[in-house]
Picture 1 (cartoon, rainbow, N blue to C red):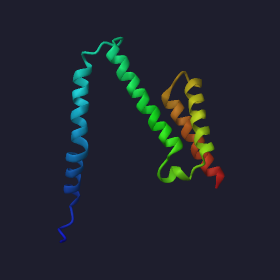
Picture 2 (picture 1 turned 180 degrees about the vertical axis):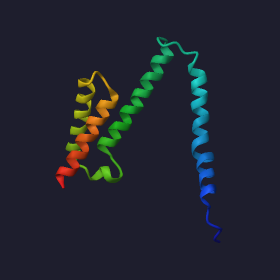
Picture 3 (picture 1 turned 120 degrees about the vertical axis):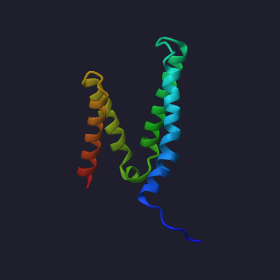
Length: 115
């Protein structure tokens, strides 16, 4: 059974209803709950530790089990780009932007030069 193809507006509405709104509800609730948490409290330290662990897991997955085009990049280059990104982060007064930018430049340059 074939139905009519989705229009662009219908597809956008589905993305908003299924993808954006459920996430946005939880973010809004987190902002409301977070207003009552003191910066030095144990709850704040726990949330910070969980967020750090999740970020570390995402970086480890990108490094050691990448998907898509990143899977074609050698592990040594991926590790080198991360190391250079950390060095850039430390060299530019702990700037996350600088660290990400340095890591991306090294990764892209390594890909381009290896071809």
